Length: 175
Image 1: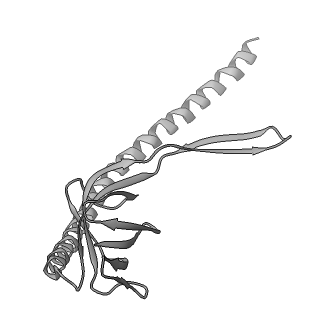
Image 2: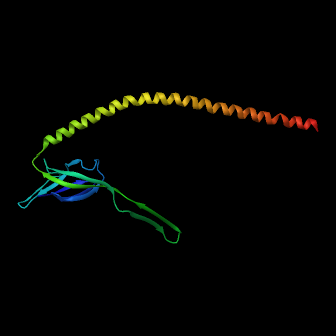
Image 3: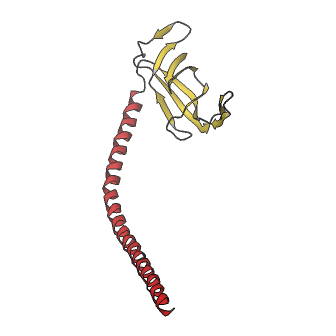
């Protein structure tokens, strides 16, 4: 059985146990990812083409590693103008191993468990958001002494400038 999936703006034809390199996806090595954008599912008997997606089809994959692709050289030149620019770029990519191709909505229970995890994740940032204002108050207190410290040296500089001016007229009177 094979499938055509869409991820990162590109399409990939995959089968079970294939290893593919795709645009960076969230996930640590060893974690599982479900790709729901399945455009076509086929086997020896026939194919099912989606319009635009095949309903109930999923591709389960395991993250093998998070890495960077080969370096691409970006060279710009304008002839006769002495204009040359050379840059390099390495795209971050994820290496996936396809573990299963699911049709007819199998393993929907796995989806529900991931949805529960995402609900828990939304509660954690709320608690973290409550802690942030307290941290800002501590930062405000730290900023006030810095401002006072800046004012004191400025006042000293003004006194030094006045002190320099006073001896100069005295020196003229002495001559």
